[in-house]
Length: 217
Image (cartoon, rainbow, N blue to C red):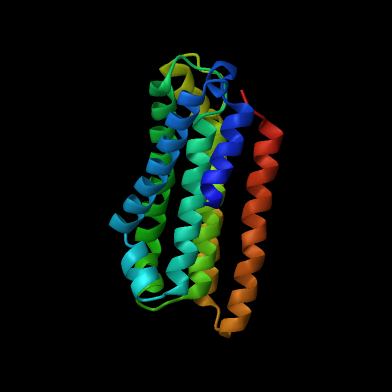
């Protein structure tokens, strides 16, 4: 519900003026947002963390944090795709596919490096779930902002996407170093949890600062 509300606010505020004044288009794009969120959950389940099995049935809080992060990241990707003027829903779909593909592509790479899915779903490492969820949400903000703006062409969109989302590689490096550090540290669960929460603020502050600095093009 919260993610849908965010999409609604972004759509009614920053989408193309001729679209947000048409109730039928508004309903269509909001329906697309709900579908896109479900697609994000499906992709996450295919990549190791499932809502039904891990969160609902097994009541695994570590998996819950990852699901939250994936939903928020997917929300940003879809919301950013609706910011600006364009010729039609096909450009929104293109931007949403581009940003969401990179979001889950980065998750796949990160997960394969550290085996996060097993640590989260089997070992129930909640601190790892917190860090991974915040990281995904922050990446979603970066990738979503990278596709936001008025449409020009496919080539320009791809060029601008790589030009503005390069900072995501720094977030990947920070995440890799952080996980290596946590793996080497022999600390209590409470200490690891506190350190993970601090890292959440680092991720969000970094992403928000960068997006605010670069603006929408």
